[in-house]
Length: 279
Length: 243
Image 1 (cartoon, each protein chain N blue to C red):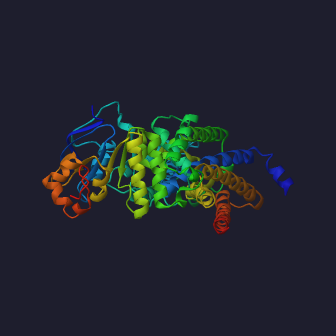
Image 2 (image 1 turned 30 degrees about the vertical axis):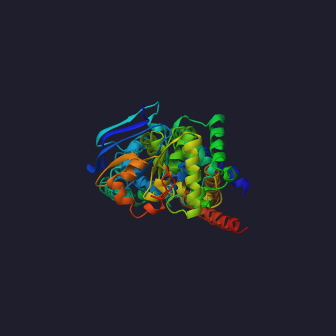
Image 3 (image 1 turned 120 degrees about the horizontal axis):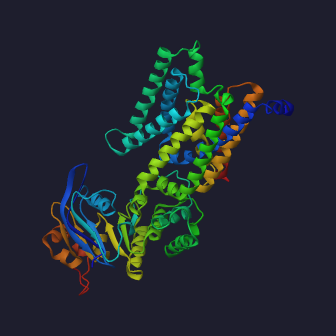
């Protein structure tokens, strides 16, 4: 088994997949804690469908390096959702649901109407479930993904105290002079970046899993915010690495394998958490 | 000069005026109770004082060296944070964000520890917030407010949902902060009984707005009307007799 792995890791595309996979897993887990606790779990889902629409449009025009376009569109959608949440015209969850289904439908429609590819369902499947995209990364995509992931980690560490305060009590933070709107905007942009990065790894339908599972699992065990954040990063990295290795050895799709492993790990965390309560 | 002066203040939200013509001033070391029925605009006034929303008219003037973000705030008990994983120390520390930038300094940490000691909750430092009782949680949030300011505390229904014993303890703590540390207290309450026991000044908002010292309130028509039921329990400060 180890020899087979060694053989695979001689290929640069496998190494790229591993580097990007681990980095994306790391940064997607960080903000998961905030999203789950602020009852924003569905934002990831909605935004990833917007990213799917952007990807479909890029595919129509046959742009191979589609990441800048997807990034811009998703960031714009994240800001729009955030602004809708602040006005009471439409409640946050309804806005997200609307944006989510609209972009999913339009994305599929555009792909069907305008695509020049002979294998439309294959293309759709790839974008939705990321079946092979992590293994077909171009070197410049690897560089861009790595830079963005590291930027997310650095910004998260710098803003950590503010993010904690905002997650725990937004009104209090605003009252003591924290620029809440600015940090909410930053969080929205970071989430958009994370989703675009995560799409390469697990496809647009499964990005939410990468964001919420680490937080949901470690919240069962740990009692301090710092411990939850650090352990969910570790959780996410281990699951992603394990998922990539399993999918290489067993020939399964990368995205769903990672999510499958995360579900198992979640159950393990629930059991540990229950046992800790009883002890 | 007074720390906070409201002149002809109009409060409301989404273009709707909830209460207008609010006039009052709070000086350093005073204990102001804001009373009024549900829906009278107490919470809206509080949000306006905290700069969470803009006044719809009139002015709030901060004086005596007080900055708008130097008001420590104790929110109403909420059940939203039930599953929040955070130690009490992490929560108290976050009060320091009123003056600290990226990371907490040694001073910030000492500040947080000191606030917890004053409220006798240092033993819960590394415990999880969700494991505490309602009264203990309120103390943690009060300690956080103390980290944010040494000048003015704004308490929004600080004892709602607490049992009588814990309520009395909470009031004693607040009174101590007011008297020993000379921290100005602004407390919102719907319980006139408690308000009249501890406050030096009363702001009554409702269809009529009244502002004055406690004895002025008790002698006003509005005060007489609203306190008629509980007057028997109030002891006059000057003569020690029941009113």
